[in-house]
Structure formats: C-alpha cells, structure tokens
Length: 244
Length: 244
Image 1 (cartoon, each protein chain N blue to C red):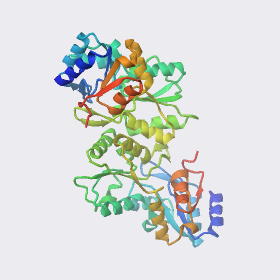
Image 2: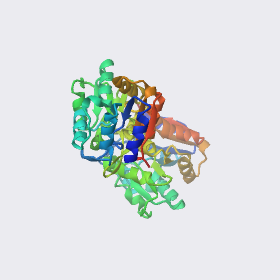
Image 3: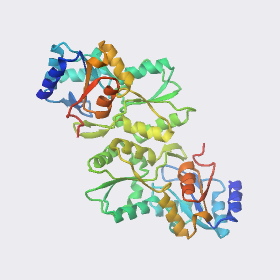
Image 4: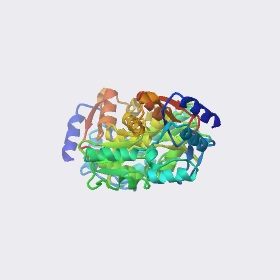
C-alpha cells in the first residue's frame, strides 16, 4: 500500500486529476455497514490531496446514501466529503426526472433516502441497485412483475458489477441480479454508474479536468479500468479488493 | 380446453406419440405444492390415452421429486404414473455419474431426494434448479462462491425457463438465476431439461417414437415449441399457463 502511494505520486507529476474507486481500493466493505480500511490507504488519500491533484471518489456504492457512506469512511480516518463523491443514485435521479420516470425501487433500504424527492406512485420503470439482503425471492419476483407488466419494460441498473469482496467473503453484485431480470423480461438494462461513459464524464466535469489529464484507479478490470479507458482516461488496476 | 381436446384428437390421427408439458398446460401450479387443474385437461389426458397414442409427460418441474409431483397430479384426477414422466433431475444424475461430478445443490428442498445416491462431498460443480424460496441472498452467494472457487466452473441448470405462472402470479424461473451465476462467474451453464435436444431425444426414445411422428404440446414458445422443433418434432403452443 505504501508502494501504491508511491506509484500515485509518480503518476501525479503527469496528471491533474485522479478518480479513485473506494470499495476494494480504500477499504474492504462489511455487509453490516462496517468494513476495514486497506493498510496505507488513509495516508495515500492524504498524500494525493497534499500533492495538489484534483481528486474525486468515483464509486458504484449503492448500499447507503452518500452522506452515510462518507461518514463511515471519515470514521475510518479518510479525508473525504460528500461533495467529492460521484455515485450512481444521484445520477439515476437526474435521469428519472428528465424522463418523467416513476421507479419501483429494488435497492438497499439505506439507499432509499436518495430517492426521497422522486415520485414513486404507479411505477413505470424499475431501478435496481446492490440491494444485498433485500435481494429476496419475493422482492425479485415483485420487481419482475412490475417490469413484465409494462408494454416496454424500462430497467435502470445502478452499476453492473459481477461481485465484490466483503470482510466475510465474496458477494454477488447488482450486475448478476440485473442479468436475471434482463433475461426474464427480454430487456436490456440502462446502466447508471461505472462503466457507463456518462458517469465518468460527469465526474471529470465536476473536477474540471479533461480525460487525457486524469487517471482512474480501481480494483475492477471492467468497471473501473475498461470504463475509464473508453472515456479516453488512463487507468490503473490495484491488486487489492476482489483482485484474483 | 374442450377445443384443445378436439385439436389433440385431430393431430392424433397423424401421429404416434405425444409429449405433454404439464405446468401451464394441464394445471396451474401453486407455490405451496398445490395448484389447480386447467378446465378440461383431466379429460383431455384420458382421451389421449384412450386413443392409443403413446404419451409422455415432458416437464421441467424441479420443485419436487417425480413421485411427489405425480402424486399431486393424481390427486387432481390425472391418469399419470412416474414411469411416464421425463424430468430434468434424473437426467442430471446420469450426467453427474458419467462425469464423476459432485454437485453443490441449489434446488428446492423437495427435489433433494432425487440426488440421494449422488456423492455431494467436496463439490466440483453446481446444480441449479427452480429453488423457489431457497433462492435466498445467502444461498445464491454460497453457490456463487463454490463456482468462483473452481479453476473451471461447472454449472448445470435444470431448465432455462424465464418465468412461469403460479396461482398467485408470475414467478422468476431457474433461467433467471442461472443467468445471474453465469454472468458473475463468466461461465455458460449446461442446460439439462427442455429445451435441450438430448432431453427431448430421451423422451422420444422412452416412447419408441421417432421425432417425425411425435408432437410436443406446451405453453412455452422457447422451451417447449422451439426445443421440440429443433429435434425435428412438430409442436403446438397452448394459450393457457404463462401465455400472454
């Protein structure tokens, strides 16, 4: 991890902005809302900020509101604020408003407050996030029935990750359940979050840095590295987190 | 349904063997092991048998052993015996034995006895069926971890249905959960049951009827109709069951 901090300092001389994945890079999450920082990462964030680089936390985390997520990381010692976080739920809310979509939510209960201002009556789409324990047989059937009952099903997925690592082991991520609904309803989900191009672009815009001068650092070869590269950024895969 | 019986009689003059789907064709299943016969279907089975046609029940049912399944149908008045049923679990057991595979089972608890004689210690594959209430978050994660821990994951799926109708509504079928595991582990499942060619072929062999002289009747356009047609059989989709 100290080596990783050193690598970051080397990159830093060439670039102006850094996008950092969080889960699996800065900490290993725990299903109960806990988790543990990866050794050296608190110090790495401090050094990046001290270097003058623009920094943005670019996460597909959907098990909590940004507020709660940031509070947890601050509790582990990270220098992070809500304004520095790019996350799928707010991006989804913008889309829902633009297209007058009223979602049926299949998400973690701690994420629900992010959708507080969205009309959810008489749903005309389904939004799926990493619902974790809310991925029950009953809830999956319910989301399926909402979709299959639509003339043209609209499924919005907060990320498309395959799996991730928690302190007690690997867990299926939202992408697996997204695929289940896609197959059952013969639809293709619209992915909000990494690796969607628009998601990286909005993070870059928030930093005011063009893709050529930014680097994405993550543990997921598809969602972090592949997604960033398709936006014209360079990307670095760390061998923590789910790396196998 | 009386009309359907009439249609069947018309086909009967041209063919020697009939493959009948069960759920959605003869009865609408109920999640609690119950269900209700579709009007006229008890009489239709009786007429088919009286006509001298060879008959085989060709089902992807994996929520119960064949014994329990047949007992339920007999209780509804159907003339059916275990020896007349072609189902995925016994077909899977043959494959497991042939290839010395030891399964981790993600199936309905009432199906487990079908695997009584199969070695399940130290699993080197995952068998997924329509586990229904057993499709919990914990059980899906467990099956995923078994698969992802293998050098070359082997996933055997008892059918690949998208959804089916129970008396209390539509339910996600095994195919949706199969897709979730396929995506998470980047593997392709081996499907046992409809629409696998080998499954129809073994049903035909059990009747001693070539595909050109047999008809498949089902409510699923892919698993029943498409699968049978790829085997050289004719097929008929009934508009009961999940037909929309």
